[in-house]
Length: 439
Image 1 (tube, rainbow, N blue to C red):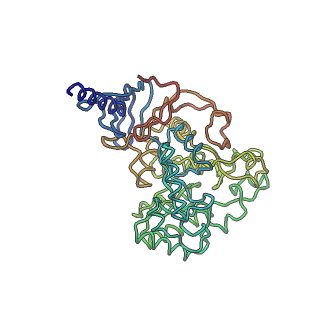
Image 2 (cartoon, helix red, strand yellow):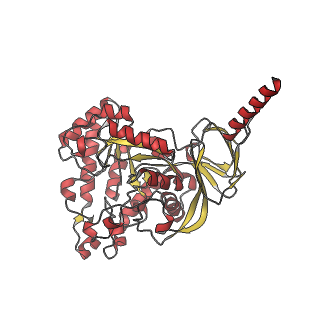
Image 3 (cartoon, rainbow, N blue to C red):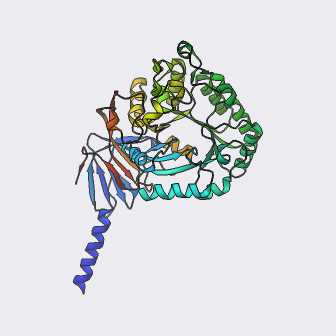
């Protein structure tokens, strides 16, 4: 009897040990706690059990040698479009992204609880990156009747948005903000005045004029921002302004925050690196919404991210070849970016001499705080959502190197520095390249 009991105890301890992971010899960077030091991590039952020293009785079922690697929180992306759930979530974890927000402009739009529940259930079944749906603010994103925000929240939505669809009637937007404020919901708007931007495909500047493209003026953004800020001030709603593209837009948000308004914002990673000049001769891979603007606008966006005014997102928009192999004005806007979010952030940090601790905050704890989720940090007891990456390993961006179904990016052919080696979600290794030694 004693022998049987001992055997069962041994088997139980073995199963428990298999759930435990020891990540050793890595440079731990956790922006939320301002940690940048060589520390070991100890993971038990999907959570961070200890940092530095092993907890009592810890037995590792797996050891990951992170020598020469940076160990940081899993990246949190504020905007990821899921053309196909499985390939895009596989691309996410390959890029170190462990949590992402899905905008409501899916097909059909996320304006029904059943649709939201299916998305949450399907993503959970895959066990890759955590998906947080953003519900439609209005039914069918038509900008007329409010969606059932309460039911959508119960189904799993964490905020509400029109994505790129306009609300032309300001009274509808006012009612939406009043309702959201009453229930403490967050509203996310991509600020662009529909009438001022109508038919535009590029920044209203020198390049658009030379190429004969219809321009979108900066005031299309600033007018929309000013309206949203005034309504937010009147209602007290939690407001997030997504994908700012101009220096003037950044200035409006900065002034609003200085006046005490609780507004947050983000910029897309490609807007930190590219400008209207990158359109070249009608390169449809450089067509974005909002458009790439002037070099001075790009510099202002980089400054806003550097100071912490703006978080950084991928704005991942996979487009098939047919959608891009069209004349510039007819091509679908957007770029694949989940697997480029980290290396492009590292590139920006190196170019502008931004401390790595600060740069990583823009894609970890800052977006997590905006979304209001328990992610983006490495603290005792937190979920073990971890990214291990080599900060200097070079690699070339090619269609074959990207796991996303979308190969549409203006960075094809570029050589990047920084590559993800291992990604963990809730203590499970969901991506592991051949470069990490395990025992």
